[in-house]
Image (cartoon, rainbow, N blue to C red):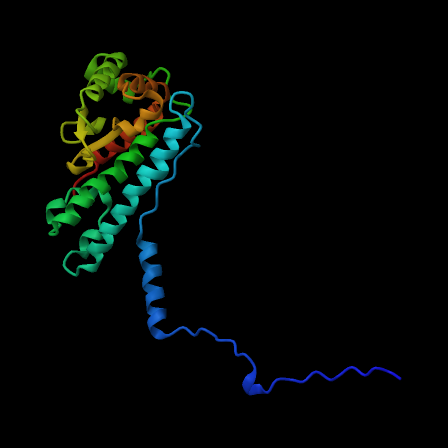
Length: 261
């Protein structure tokens, strides 16, 4: 005899497992749109203009990775959080539409003390680090000659060497954490060496254009140099981006010559 395959019994429709489909409700759609809009308004972490290893052996890879991916990212995130709070306030949202430099010059207009403090610290850290990372280059260092920046440094300090000595001294004298700067003073039409504490920035003052920035917080050099700040400053001169500083000076002079409306 032959075996007959038994017919497979089909489950009644009512017993079949149903696949639950998720349908977007008006509420979830609105939340999705708001989330997308918020993300779109967030400031991105500015990318490095070179690889993390590119400044070796003067500035080590480990420091560059931590400095950019951890510290600079943290300032970016905190600044975005403060901007989101400003946008949520009908009377303060106009401040969030300003550029970061302009916002840092309008700190007194921020009514909430906590937000004001965050913008000052995180906003300063955001712009300071971007200038600092662009103040170095794998093809930097060397001798600065010619007109432009070199000519201005000679006119102001007597020579490029004397400028470097004065800048180094300013960086060494920063107490605790802070920054050393070469800035162009649009009103005085000249160069100036200055320093700031914590994450304060020359951008807080109208007419001050940063040309070079040196971060002298310990996290900028401790892995390689421990507490030897002087060794770190000497390493900075080996990678200093004279070309970037020259471009910034040229832009500042053009800003100075721009007629007022």
